[in-house]
Image (cartoon, one colour):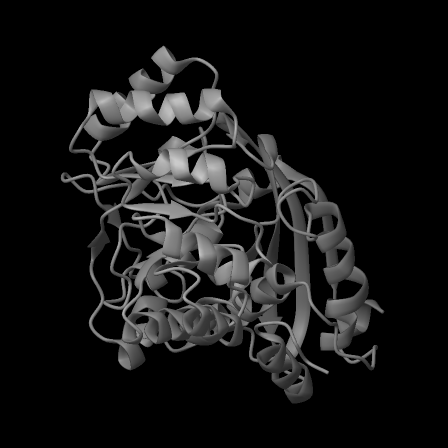
Length: 380
């Protein structure tokens, strides 16, 4: 049974036997600012970077942006590296006989790397390939600046002011059910009465805390309840006046259709790493938009590899709200790739070179590497 987004594409890739070699890098980059959310704290960004080399010599890159611990999802970086090395890659190279089940972020990294290789070989930009099916893309996208949890409300207000000055079109605050988090959101709203403001509960809120946030004029309240509680989310959506956005809940088009039928929200966070890569994410965004939902592309604190691929989706006309993706300078002193930055209006520029449009710098990749593994038929 193939159930994970992207698994059909992965099976097709393995069947064609066109992968000549796979490189995996477990990398760690220090974050400029500690990221605090309801599911935990990230000080260093540890992800798996994938390079596929095809039989014709073309190369492509993908990223598995798991977190360092299984507090956000059941995928985490050490396990993703092991799964790719021991299961997915041998299967692609013909030495294993079963389709790996689940693990959508690991699968999406391989799918994206293969797509990148194919597009580079034809000198085609990912954003242009997606546009051929989904409409003319934007060259730069408005962005939401995501601000982590903090107990220092004065500092929170300072950070929000800095992000607004840098051109953010919207501010999103991470929040749990604690009264202090609700008070922090209220402080931001009282400082900027007209600010486009959203809150992300990462599945940790309850009806009481969600109701307290409802009167703060939010553009949307993201994932207030646990991911698997579509019925509870539907009930909450009927109770609240602000729109509910689904993030972790939506793992496939089938789940989105269930949410549509139940009325579990009216906005969806589309993350290519969770939805089988850029093509899967673009397809889901189109379904949501056609149903009248708002759509935005979320971020996973990716390096430039993953962020460039996600930006190609964020540029599509079916994405109607500012993206959570930010410039490299918000995350790292030195990104793995050339820096992804904003235009003079604070919008994030979309790479338009071949494939995903960026390539890791060899020196930066080497400096950030925790572990490297190369597989090829000859190496077995």
